[in-house]
Image 1 (cartoon, rainbow, N blue to C red):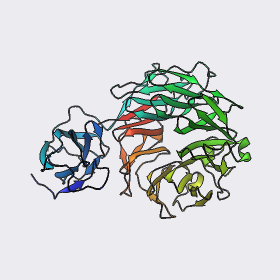
Image 2: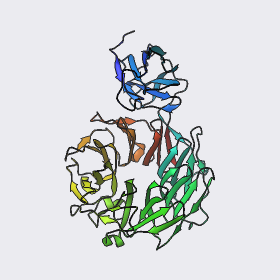
Image 3: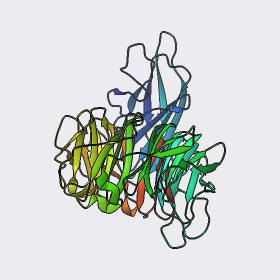
Length: 475
């Protein structure tokens, strides 16, 4: 069997590897290597807890798995031979004790064979709603593998409204949760966020915020002061600081302990005839809200775009200074010194929270951009019409990535810099990695339009979209 030189793969390490760290050296016996195999995928666990994934060439037959200092227990190793779309063509597995004593390195062998069942990394889940007409699903959030919430409603004529589903790790179908009795009928849920399994908050198009608890299996509407407007997005730093935003410049801050939401001063009166499309934050003192027109057109026009910052210690939000005649509709990551917002005609701005000033970047595209997300300051992704762009903290010019797909991308999320998923129309899913200028299309198993992606770790990733589409990545 051919072997390459030793490859150091820091799969489970949380810091730099030291000489006293336990390590497994694994020889991969791939005598069984079906045609079409593009890469090997190594998935690790430590005492059942997932580590990072690593992809490597089929020529690399020996790998080193570095473990955290002081690790004990059992290491789980699964190796998959995958094709270009992340479908499994061969597999092998190993469970081994963490090396102890003076000899902190042990060597093992994993033999590849035909998979126990043919599958791709993403599989389709059922909604559990029954009926021929399924609702459009708008958002997904989860605290852990057994508490993933999917929300939405409407879409096709006759599709159910007020849809909220809970998905768990071992089920091929998600379970509907009853709508809160206080809600106005004929509306939909637009966004979901939670602090933990007992504190899930959902934005409703009736202008109400709903709170759910996994152990109770039910939801109830929170009390809200002020005029109600349709809510489009929700995010929180903790159960006492949950923000929901929507039409006519409406911003609510909600408290889990009081079950009450209070309207805030948005800091930009020009939005009274338009609205906010998204809220996102870093902590309770750094919450960012962006908007213009309160629908997709917000990313295609330069009408009254605005970005404001809200703080837990104040009922007034503060407007950022942004370049004129730009349109914005999404806000997201970076680091404490940098916040990014994206919108129409390839607009990307990087904002400084200390000065409340935003600077326009060279995005490299004129495509409309609908969502932004980052794993770290050097991996900031903006996605939109047939376009994926990656920006870095040290540069005012972003890089347009190739992906080989035709799709309007609506959602982006990653478990780490090497596993970033972008989803869009036509059932298109692509995976991007920090070191690559090209993203790879992944087999999704659906042609439905996809709207959002979120995961609890690299091996529990959920994608939702039109016609009741729920995809789960589980290897």
